[in-house]
Length: 217
Image: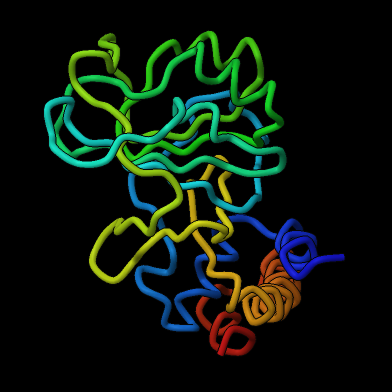
């Protein structure tokens, strides 16, 4: 089993909340939290864990490189595409046709730091889509893909690199550098065991303050 496969196996036992708390303890920027990215499809108890394929979008008339393929064709089996759209645009850069292609290629889902559209189509095909928001406008006259699989800055010192592990659920999205996965899993397991004891104490009627002080040092 590859290191990435082992890391994913360990992380899948935990939620984004667990993982974010562990990353805060490890002093990873912003706890790896991709603030504002929320699940738009399919909802419920869906959670996805997978290595990232990154896509940088730019405004249509911006200078710079153009990929040799449509960026939706860069999806891979078992991966999650992370797309960064220029801030402040009112258009979407992901829609139902793209989810159809990504799902056919075996992608686990897509995370868009920007807007998406065709929400019901994604839900109908049960394809996980996370985004900052929605739009009725397509990308054609607003944005284009510029680079694929390059490091992308989310905020401050928090970056998403190709093959970083993305985790998304109903709570939100976190990104985990592969170099930290073993430590993250260990910390998540420790906190899980403490939380089980804390929950048991609270159900038995113990007060919150002393219980937290005693168990969650």
